[in-house]
Length: 408
Image (cartoon, rainbow, N blue to C red; front, side, top):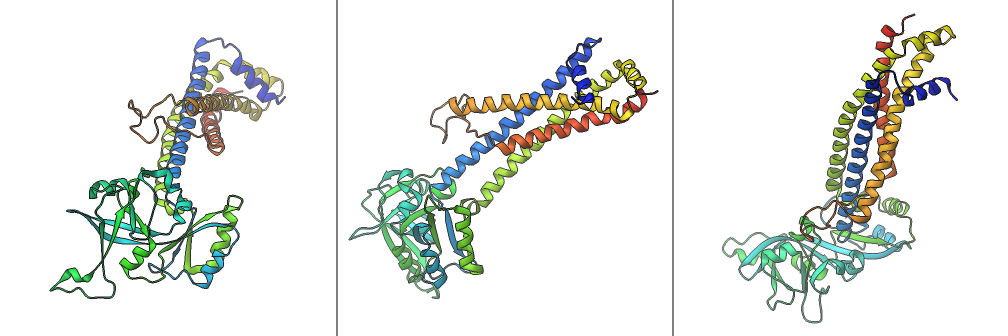
C-alpha cells in the first residue's frame, strides 16, 4: 500500500486527541455528501425534463427534415431529392407545404401556420396519439378537412364535426393589391374541422392547422413545390450514418435537420439552464469544501510531533505533504462517492414511485411527478468536479500553511 495514503487513511478514521477535529472532519464529509446529492439529483431532473420535451416534440416533428438553404420552397422532383427518396433506409416520406394564412370561422379570425401534408403524415408523426377529438382525416371524395391545434380551435371556436367550414385566406402571389376591391387580392379555400390535436407545446397547439397538401398548393398558388420533406427512417437503420449520407447526397443546397436541430433554441435553453444550475451548486460545493481547510489545518497542528518523527525516520517534505493532500482528497472522494450513491438511489426511487409531485391536483400538468433520468456522463462530471475542488481545497493549507507548521 502507498505509504502516504496509508498514513492519511489512519488519520482520517482514527480518533483524534481533540474531539473538535473529528467533528469538523465529519462536517466536511457531510457537506460534500449533501452538495453531491444536490448535483446528481438536479442534473437528473433536467435530463428527465429534456426527455419529456423530446417526447412531446416527437409527436409532431419528424426524425429528419429537409428544407431549402435559400428560398421558401423547392421542387421535390429534383434529381438529388429523387435519389434520397430511393434510399432503402427511408420508411416514410411526407411532402409538406406550409405558410401563414388568415383563418376565419364564424365571426372569429386568427393568423395561423397552415401545414399541408399528405396521408403518410399519420405514420410519420403518430398523430393519432395526440388527437383529443375526431379522427385523422385530410379529405374525402367531397370536401377537405383541417386539424387545428387545441389552442387554435379554442381561438376560432371550432371543434370536430362542426357543420360550417373554416375559411383560409392568403394573398395572391405575384399580383398587386386591388385597392378598389382588396378582397379580390386574396385566394380563398375551405376545409371542415375533422379533429383537434394537443401536443402540449404552445408553438404548435396555438398556431398550427394541418390540412391536405393539395389545399395549401391551391391556397398559395403552387403546383408541385414543397417547403420541406419530412422523413422517418426504418427501425433497423443507423440514424447518424443515414443522416450523413442524405446530407452528402443533397449537398449545399439543402439543410437536413434531426429533431434536436429542428428545436435547437428550446434544447439549447434547457442545456443552459441545466449547466447554470450545475455551476451554482458547484459554488455551494466549494463553500462546503472550505471545511477541509479548517480540518486539515487543525490536523496538521495536532500531528506536528508525528511529522518530526517521520522526518527523523527519513521522510522528505514532499512525502509529508502528500500525506495531508491524501487526507483532503479522501474527504472529498468519500463524500463524492457516498453522495453519488445516495443521489442515484433517490433518483431511482423518484423514477419508480414519483414521490415528489409537480402539484397537488392530479392531471394539472403533463406529468404528475418530477421526471428524472440518471446519465453516466453527469455522474462522472459530478465526481470529477468534487475531486477537483477537493484537491484545490486541500492544496492550500498543505503548501502554504504547511511551510509554517512543518518546520524542522
